[in-house]
Image (cartoon, rainbow, N blue to C red):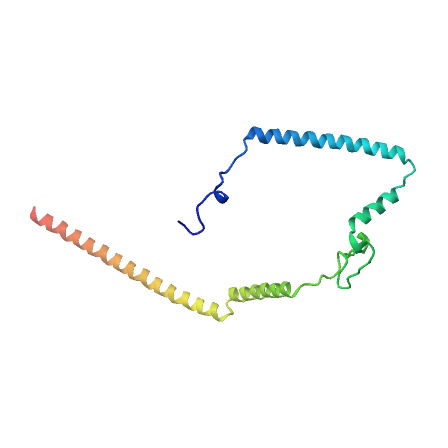
Length: 178
């Protein structure tokens, strides 16, 4: 038997599932019950408002405050000195054009981008050590390619001359056979 016992329900009971019809019936009964409670609540409120026509709204708010603060919270005012309250600013007080204070990370990021741009300008101008090494390497490669192209041209010209000489020799040889 695997560790943890048999799979299935608790203590050997079979699992039971509710059918969709039963779920629908329960939902309808619950909706009807809520409707009935709302209707009764509205009737009770109407009766109370008729009994007390001179009731002011301030009494209702006092009742709500006492319900919100339970226990000693309603009696003792506690102020946390460490709590920072959100201060609302008026639209006229907001400075849009004033200098913005950047965080250390933002400043470092901007400095890094500026340094990279300066380096790229110097690199393109050929003033950095890496640019000088790249240009020297490119000059060597150009010379090698020019030499290779010149050798190819010489070989091609030599081949053409050899073919022309062979064609001329064939032409003379074929003439002599006739």
